[in-house]
Image 1 (cartoon, rainbow, N blue to C red):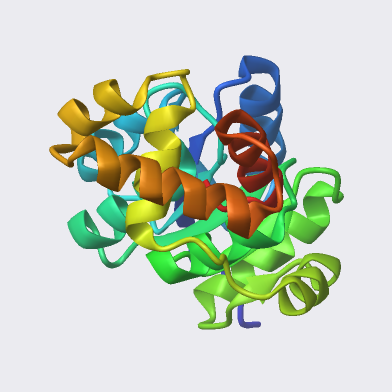
Image 2: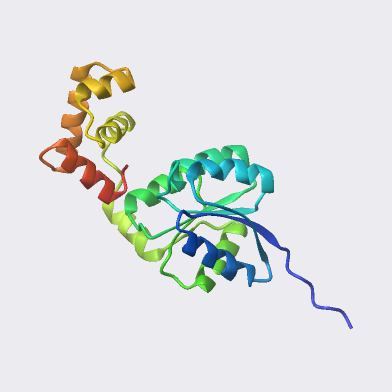
Length: 209
């Protein structure tokens, strides 16, 4: 009698700064016959080096972590290890984050409050070639539209988030102070806010930063 075939095992990297969540994901995925967790990291700057060492088939990345978040790491990971599929797993279900993740090359975007069985199935669908997105978030992204900020406006607004003055930002980004002020004014107008810090908060809430 023929023996049942064993499913191929996919190597998994988990990037999550909360140790309890990271460990729980690792334990639950290791219970699945077709997954093996080969790397766990707690900061964004560890993702690519760990992936190059362990060569995972899929990377589960959180968005907000020390050392750069999952969105920033996605493009770098896709460039360094194209064979590794990226799935964003996050509590931050914001339409702007979804668009940025997909633009960077992520193949999946799921929220953490889903059962682990659904996460495992989402990973399998991604590995089969699908793009998997939380349905409610996909609908919200379509209704919200793209970010109104240009890449330069986003860069200036990120630089302003720590309270830096226009002079500080101009030195950091090698722009004139008048150009920085013009970009900040545009950000304030586009976010419908009253000042740069409100603009930062509004842009973050929408997932544009």
